[in-house]
Image (cartoon, rainbow, N blue to C red):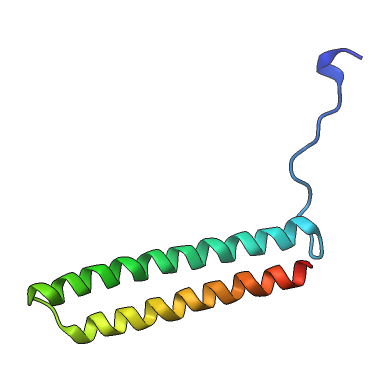
Length: 88
């Protein structure tokens, strides 16, 4: 066999239901979504709190942003812990 005739894998495999790649794909999508939500909530928290300190914004928006950030972070941490428990 020459080098050009050697068989090569044709990608990551099929994404049929029940396959390992399918499970990993859903986990990666969830991780990306939670990370994006945390980043947006964190930026919103920083901006609203800075505006509140300057006196141009409301403290209520800052408090709501902090609560939503805390909820998002706690859900993200719970998801990571739950996934770690199921792998054991």
